Image (spheres, protein in one colour):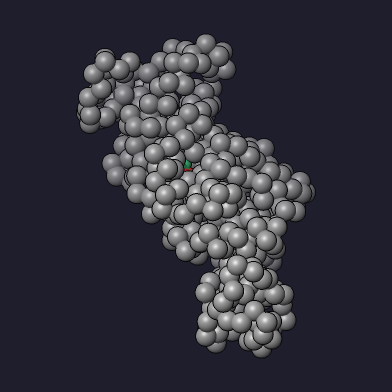
Length: 405
Ligand code: HSE
């Protein structure tokens, strides 16, 4: 029997307990041993619940118990999760987590510590909810040089954008609904300002390119300025607006960014809707691969955490997680990244093309008859820097959205 402890009995923690209880027999077969939850750590009491008898409030009880071989850290936040994780690894225990904030900030150091101790620090649930993406990058796509990862990595914002696009519902109402459905972070700012997707693309990029990507250096723009009018333009153009987290290799240098992007029907990401996530990976020998599935929520996330527990149980004394170098990846300035831009400008629809081309160069007009006092304009490809310089000369610009290449 392999004894485990679960730190945190919130949404994901209770999901982990539920998954282990529900699939006890099949998990036992796959782990080649019984997985038994010895402790659940939480500050709160849960009278009448199935964890009442195994609930503890003091971490010392867990970290000092040699019977506990695997610690599941699903508390979220950096502290005390960081200290608890370090102490568990130092004590020779494996740690599985869904904590993207901690992995993005200290993942490299924690994996190194795990390797020194001959154990594993696993974090499949930190990116893409229930979608297997960390394990494929760690152990399946190892013959490739990965040169692009583009993903819809946040279920909450994808749910909000889908509702806004399909039903023309307003942002605040849909955000509230996403929170009620349990998709959103404790602080919704992390979702809607793109910080959550930023941490996830930093983790995926570090793993894929083998060097640390500092999430604080990833250009990040959220969805709070996207309006129902933007959705109407997108629909008229046959595109959808997605919060895209992208990292690309460019002549052995890299860039990473998170922002709302207009995606055309030719992209597999176009039809990733609702709380689903989609992650597109391009490898130099593989070509394209796409990972798709439930990107947030209690049970999908718990499924990924428990899959890590099974993997750890099969490799109790062998490190199988590949770490990345602490040396920072050589990042290109985002100002040099090229896009086409969709721009909304206040003004006369009849003279719009001429006015826009005089400032932004050749392009295409997009008109919505119901928005009489403005027009849309699609630029040709240009660098972010060049666009910003031209756009600063536009007197009546309402907004701009990048278009996926
Ligand atoms: N708030 C996150 C999301 C949870 O909506 O994707 C899963 O990481």
